[in-house]
Amino acid sequence: MKKIVVIGGGLSGLSSAVHLVNNNFKVILIEGSPKLGGRAYSYFDPKTLTEIDNGQHIMMSCYHDTLELLNIIDAQNEIKIQKQLKVNFVGIGNQQFSLAAKNIFYPLDLLLGFLSFKVLSIRERLKVIDLFLDLMCCFEEDLEDLTVEEWLRNKNQSQKAIKNFWGILCVGIMNTKVGTASAELFAFVIKEIFLSGKKNTRIIVPRSGLSKVFAEKAEKFIIENSSEILKSERVINISRNDDSLIITTQSGMIINADFVITSVPHFALIKILDNALKGNLVDIRLEYSPILSVHLWLKNNFFNEDFYGLIDSKIQWIFNHDGFITIVISAADEFVSKSEKEILCEIIYELNKFFPMFSEDLVLNFRVIKEKRATFVPNISALVTRKRISRNMQNLFIAGDWTNTGLPGTIEGAVKSGKLAAFDLIAQA
Image (spheres, rainbow, N blue to C red):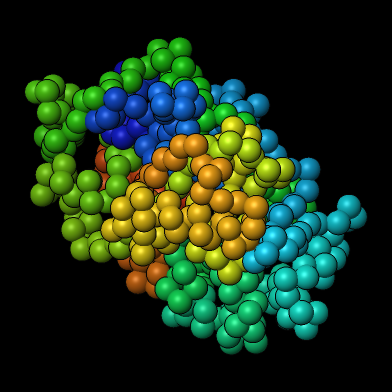
């Protein structure tokens, strides 16, 4: 039997391993850290006796590869899927707005939902709908050289609509602001979410910690199907010897593999590949964007909804976990160098603007998590760069959300990349 090794136990690596195992292949998955899940993991906080996520993740019902993976590993009950799209937005002074699909047939449900989105003027709402209709009916534009902001201005979107609607979507989906993000990629994702059927527009949130949703179930599935997982075993070199790939780990372990899938970030992959295997990967240049998550434990949690979007705020999202709330700031470059105390002060100030009843006295405990290289920046140059990345070099296959999946650095992008690598391998095995 061929020896197959997957390097990296993040979501792309878990996806590769699960799909291989599900197709009757035995694999060895090697992960350098003591945990699986990559950036999508949870841990127990002893001070608050709470399981918290490294960073809150939101998913969409158009994440078909992610939903397929969850079904394979029997984790479909660990997520909550909306019956239909509904997002509660809050403006300064606790102004409440709702973007909600109506209970009628698609796409009229979305059309009426956007018409009722009173953050924008009626004229601005009609312009938003006009752009969606343009995407739906006659989207033949070449957006390769445009940023999201340039494209939206070309489509007569007002500054207010860009800031209070499109900008929130862009930062949430792409972890990059409209002035930098690629219009081509953004338009594709918007079509996937809003213009590919009623079932694809719904938001998904985890019912439990991310480790329980992904890593624990995937690990159980892999091990129960006669495959192996090695944790805290860092790969330091991959080289070729005739038709075999030689994997060397920091502990001195040497594995001769017939096939290898790597599912680590580009900057980590370059360090472990032998020079003869790097190919054009050495020419790849990607920038990275941070995400800031702040968990707040409150004396009195007055938040009623599962999550909120904030209008014209440094904070994009608030997620309600009953015992605590999680604040998410994407494209959080301005916060990376700040101290935890400075960040907490800014968060409290911002929350008080939107919820006047919120004050520092409510905060019992807090945790600040900075993911400095959370995702690659999906700018114009990154799209050109990704199109040059080869997914396979003979018996070496490359996975990761940074590869050419056609998606930004999302859970779906990671899972899709792992699945693609697995089926590329299966086609050769």
